[in-house]
Image 1 (cartoon, rainbow, N blue to C red):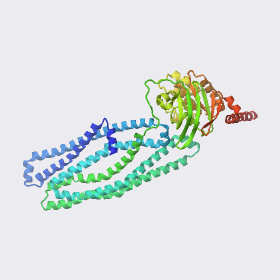
Image 2 (cartoon, helix red, strand yellow):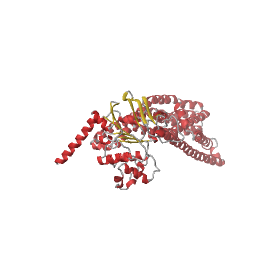
Image 3 (cartoon, one colour):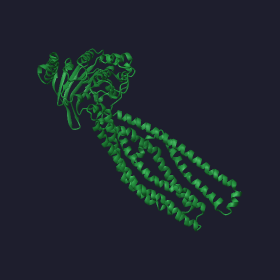
Image 4 (cartoon, helix red, strand yellow):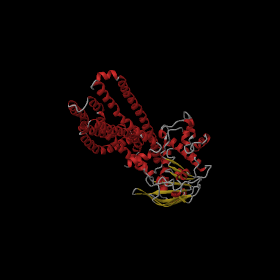
Length: 591
């Protein structure tokens, strides 16, 4: 079975420990017949047997030895069970650690397309609840299966040894129990797959709501979000109850059939004792070991319940485990080099699913040049710059860096030569110093401050409670949009990349701050090709070349002066923004 092979593969390093645990489970469970056999001898020899009173006096040492033996075997089984459980736990926890690390690395190595099609909440469920279900199965469910099966077989073998006819009477209950369990398994399995999906939806809703709490509060949509969460919660609760009710539908049958063992023993065993075909000691042994038949039968329902949960969770984990990114490294360089920063788009096209986003884009940027990109929302600006660090791969044409197709460059080397700052800034729950130095954790503090100064961030950081040691919240909570953008810009410049991509990075800063940033970008101490997406003419005016995108195509290209002379899209944006500024100045003057 594929799932079992997968588990065995991931037990590498703990296989011996796990096999020892399985063997000890069999040994410990087999020992359950020892105490009933001792009890049988005690009853037949010292209680109901011939000359029982005399033997009780004359063979007292044997009786004491048998009693001590029962106590000793009980302590031995308890100790063995404890040691076995420790082995199971150690092996399963080690396996869980390895799988979680492997899955995390897998997720980290996926391309952007994977994240576009997988919900964050679903991935979190796979990394937590689903993995814990696999660990639980390895540590407890398989242990329960082995021990229940061993106890059942040992009890049946011992019962056959004592009396075949009574054993056959008891085993009449086994077929109907297995039929009930089989029907239950077929009915409940699809329910747990659905339950797993509803849990994923619930986690996704929770994650989105917590992550977007500012937006929720800004629009006063708390009640709406509560209702949405309640809907997902009700769906999950309903599915959980439905699965539980299925178990409750079959539980009475399994419990009744399990309890029927005692009834059969009393009726059939009692008749055999009356007829003299069974001794009181043998009857006592049957009675003491009857749980060896009844308990495994009771466990069948619980085992099937958890096994179905296990398969539902494991199928989701395996989806990540065997997921392969479309964008992979072709080779690993021995020494990573610094690029010159020459960029060329050669008849580039890109489709997202079936929608064309970019169509026959061609342009080049020489080392040290600044290329500005403008265009209406949805024109393909962000998609275009995402092709340079290979967040996505082109569907037609080529993107070249230093004359080499980026698909032939090693990913870490390529991306290590590119600094990226986006409008939607993500800052980690760390100090400001840690966020700025994210690309180079060993960066000296004075360098961190220098790049913060270039990004016009030093002044406001210095005024914060602990300065550069101030902890920023998740995603930069506690900072304004402009402050987050400036920290992100400092982070991008701090690695001194030969290629710098700025996606509307100064949209939330004032004009004076923007001028400071533009000046810093022009006067960088290292050679850097800059690709800047912007909507402000003030940002693009001093670029070496400006590209205007519309519908995924370049419709205008040139310098600031050349595009104004063409009186196209760029001219209209320039006129609109300058007229807006003029109106604001006039309005302030009238006040």
